[in-house]
Length: 90
Image (tube, rainbow, N blue to C red):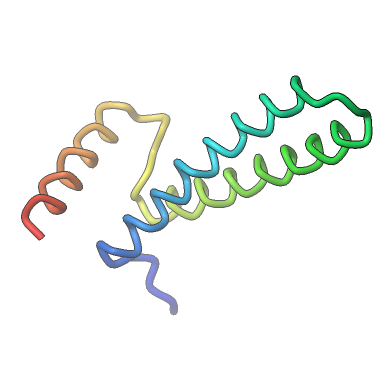
């Protein structure tokens, strides 16, 4: 059976990927509103959809491993504090 626990560095990488995917979603949405041709908008809309799917996959990956839980804010805040302590003491 495969272990779902991540090393500290893998956790940091996956969390960064989650945040960067969210930034990509915002960037694609902005680009769609600023594009001047239908062809470019169509391309950007498809890329936006792909970015949203990627964000969901990364979130589920982290949630399944108990790293990220957006639906339990107090528990997530405690996890964030523990993560910060580990990062500062590593």
